[in-house]
Length: 191
Length: 171
Image 1 (tube, one colour):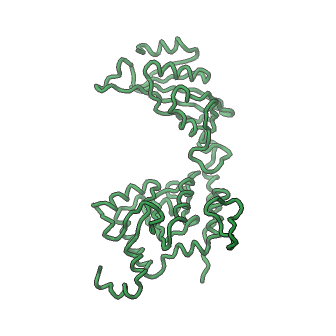
Image 2: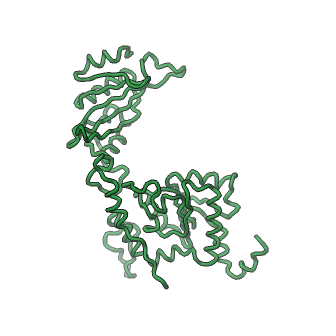
Image 3: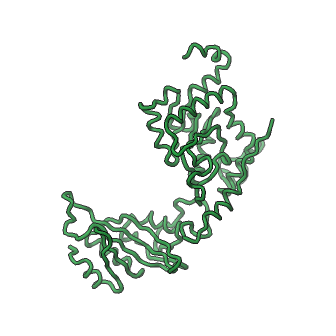
């Protein structure tokens, strides 16, 4: 631990702990995932920054979407994102999640990821270099410190809009079940 | 085994032509009724690896061209164990308005996923296929999306561009 940061640790220990324990979900989408093995192994060693890949979304708090998102993948992304515990941060990696990239007129690839799940930040490029991941991570630290990495709060607040956009693509989503106001019965049509 | 594959194949099947393709391949074209028997014949004569089943859309001819790429396993010394060429490409034309064909899964089991793919992307109906269920696509498309008359730009404008951005409330 850096001694200079002792003040910050005493002031806001939770935020500082979140900052330095980013557990990235192993979720491989598109071609960008090829940049992740060098990032997490000896060459660039992401563990210096506290970024560790974890096996299940239930342990993770950093979700990197590493490339184009087809409809089938989007369904899995929504499912994965909903399973992650708070606090959770989402980063779009590469130009495809930003605006479709080279799949701008593809019949089966979504164009703007932030219309379906909330996103904290983007890494532009096709492909971004591994160094860009660390720029993003340090930037994410700043956002967390200032309380600006609030994608899961935004998701909760605007859930109606996100869900409506998701259902425009998939018809009626059967998961996650919608909250019914607390009378204990799951909504009709949900599992 | 198949010395003179061209002569043997043309003698055995009516309206089947064999031409030389690129250096290491034969191009065979046949009627859609005889696809299965030609495939079985080729399998017996050593081309026992089905590498690919694909399709070419030819709207000008009103045809969907079904393409089977067959291959013979190379020997360790690089020889072809008596066969003349490494690959055989079998083509057959299906009518575009009602593309139907007998499934090849009885001859090559590996054709199953390829045929499911062609069924959903080109709309070809394979008779006798046990599981013609969706493979890649999540949505239903009026025109199968790999056909030439499927307008991707219009589709994107219609579907994806109509999905609104999230409006954040200022609090």
